[in-house]
Image 1 (tube, helix red, strand yellow):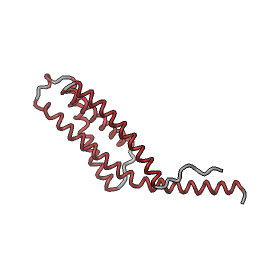
Image 2 (cartoon, helix red, strand yellow):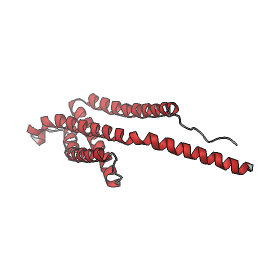
Image 3 (cartoon, one colour):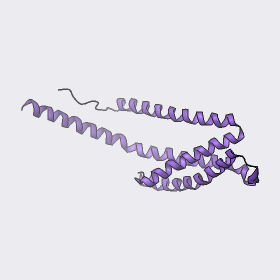
Image 4 (cartoon, one colour):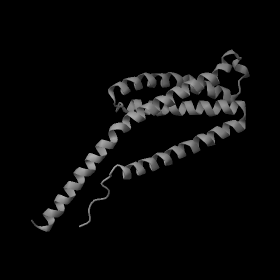
Length: 168
């Protein structure tokens, strides 16, 4: 067997090992993502109901801009988030997320509207509270991203990631 053929076999073995490793890792990842999404959707609906409730009995002329933004953002977000929760039940039942670009875009839009509603609601209570939740939300997202990446790297090492391809 010549050197090129031997190297090609090494690469094929490594590729097969890496492919099997990624398939194994991805199996539980999607179900966890569905659980996390459902928690975010329900949480934002609950927060929206609590923040919008005081504005239901107030004359609209007395609402300031931040209160109006809060009400409008949640009036758009709550129905979208509710639809996403219902869809999420079907996805959980099927154990896979939809691949629809429309659903992905609308889901991100609903989460964004919910966050805007939360910021505007806290801003209405006190400007400093609005700034604080905006900063804390941004820091929370950064913390989640960094933590998720770290957990994934540590899990990859612990679960036998084949690592980089062999050197010739």
